Structures are given as C-alpha cells and as structure tokens.
Amino acid sequence: MQMKALGLIVILAVGSGGAASAQPNEPVLPKSESPQNGTPSGSIATPPSSPIPVPVQPKPRVPEVEGKPPAKPMTPSESPAKEVPAVKSDAPPVQPKPRTDNDTKGPAKSPPPGNGSVAAKAASPPLPPSEITGKDGAPMVLVPAGEFTMGSDKGDDDEQPVHRVFLDSFYIDKFEVTNGRFAKFVEAIQSEPPWGFADKETPVTHPDQPVRWVNWMDAMGYCLWVGKRLPTEAEWEKAARGTDGRVYPWGNDVPTPAHAVFGLKEGADTVSSIGNHDKGKSPYGVHDMAGNLYEWTIDWYDEQFYTKNPAINPRGPVEGTAKVQRGGSYTNSGYRLRSSFRTKGDPTEHDPNVGFRCAQDSPTSP
Image 1: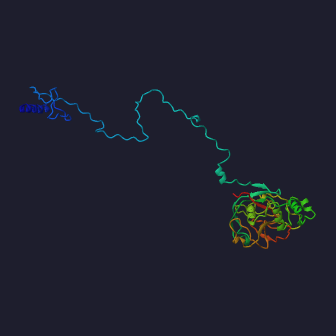
Image 2: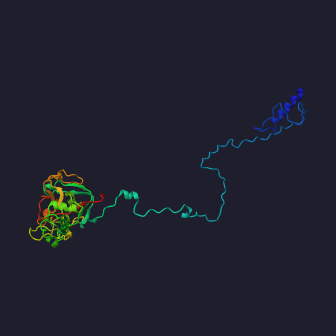
Image 3: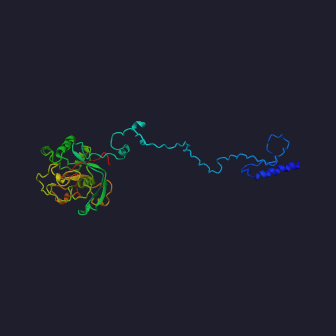
C-alpha cells in the first residue's frame, strides 16, 4: 500500500510540470484528492503505466469591473441614452419650424393708451398752461418756477447786492389793468371812484388805457375782488427781465419810443393803450413793464432789503411806511425804465403816473 501511494504522488508531480501543465491561474487539485473516475469511495485505483494528464480546469470568469477605472457618476440632469449610430444622408438638413404666436399661450396684452407709464406721470406732474384767462377776463401768462438774478451793480444802492433768487411758478397779467375793467369794480363795490371816474367819462372814452390815479389800496382791492393779488417785488422783476440778467424787458438795448412810453411832460394825453408796444415786451410776453405807468407791488419798501433778502420766494418787510413801485412811467428817463430799478410811494396817495397789474399763484408748481 505504501508503495502504490508513493507512485501516485510522483505521477501527479510529473504531470504538473509537463506539456499539459496547468496555467498559473488554474486551480490544482489537492494532494489528498483524486480525480473521480467512477471508482467507489474508499478504494484506490491502480495507476496506468503511462502518465495521466491532469484535466485542465476552465479559467474562472473575472468580473468586468476588475482592472477598469470606476464609471463616472451621473448627475441628476443626466440620464443614460441609447447610442444611435449616425446615418449618412444626402437629403438637405431640416430647418426648424419658425415659432408663431399660435405656438404659445396667445398674444401679449397691449399697453394702455397714453404717453409714458403711470409711475412716470405721477413722478412728473403736467406743466400748467402758458397762458390763462383771469376771472376779470384779462389774459395772464405763466412765469415758470426757477432762479433768476435780482438787483444790479450798475444802479442805485438799494439795488445791491446782486443775488440769486428762487421763485415758485406764478401767473401775472399780460397787460396793466384798464379803465374799462376797473370801472366794473367801482360799480360793483359802490366805492368812491378814483380821479376821472366820477362822471364815468374816462372809462367810456379810454377803456383800453391803463387805469391811473389809483392808490395801493385801490389796486389791492381790485385784485382781491377778481380772485388775484398784487405781485411781489421779486415776482415783478422776474416777469420783467427773465433769467438771463437783461437790463430791460426787451434786452440790453437802450429804450426807444418803439419799446416804451417815456420822457414826456405831464399834462398831455400821453398814456398809451395796452398792447401797443410789442417790441418792448418781456421774455414771457408781458407788455408795458417799462414806461407808461409805474406799477404797485404788494411789498413794503426797505432800502436795505437786499442785504437780508431770503433766497426762496422773498417777501418784503412785514411793515413799513411806503410800498414798492416798479417800471418807470411816461414822465421818466430811460434810467428808471431798467427792470431792477426800485422806487416807493405812499399807499394812500393817488398819482397820475401810477397804475398796476395783478398776479396769482400757479395751480401747480413744477
């Protein structure tokens, strides 16, 4: 028995190193095992005289994942798709179908009619009209809000210092108040009429001439009666000279009879009817702000007012003895026709060369 077992071991050793030897990865049967050839268990078969080749076991299948780099993980937006081989074709490429309104939910709503958005309109209020008609039927022109240069360094001491002033927008009468309009006021309030109105001759014969012989209280009473007021001194000057610092309402040229009525003697019928001197109107279209008649303003006179004048909507002192007059008259020289010239008058006195015009606030001040 020992000799047979030893022979089997030798045969197996020789077979493992011969031409039919197993591959490095092939499993080798354990020495204690023998190939099953149908011999009953527990018995030992007699080996043949020739060497028996060791059966070659199949190469175990290695998982494909071994030795390969790990697959790239897919992002949530990626999904595996089956690869389709490209097919060569001679047909022209198909152009994408143009998108029409029918492919969507429907046409967009049209914006409401009007210029600009609602927010833009709310942010920019509309400008007031450039000309309106007052309650007395007199035309009034707009003086827009903004700054202008007030005073002059070439005039009298009470015109200095030159300074910048901001005013809100306002309206002012295009012409001086006429005899015809003032006669309606006298009749309505049944007051003592000014000089020349007692026999009603003046308003009948010269209805389009500016009313004169009116004191400050007469002028203020008329303006209040028609829902207006007298202009401030600053408003009057801006309406006369504009924002470019001109000397006269029409510019810097010296005055001529085509610009204004001035340099005449008292006593003659020298007052001109309104609207006869278009060449002398101001930048805003206001007539006769130089010559013809001095004009009352609402402010009290103060010779030193410009040294303490507020920069926004200035008003005169709260009290005084004289009211400011502006514009020169038919008896004055060209020097007093300058828009910055200041003078004064007793508010109770009636003078033949003094008239007035009214003003009122603008409904909106842009």
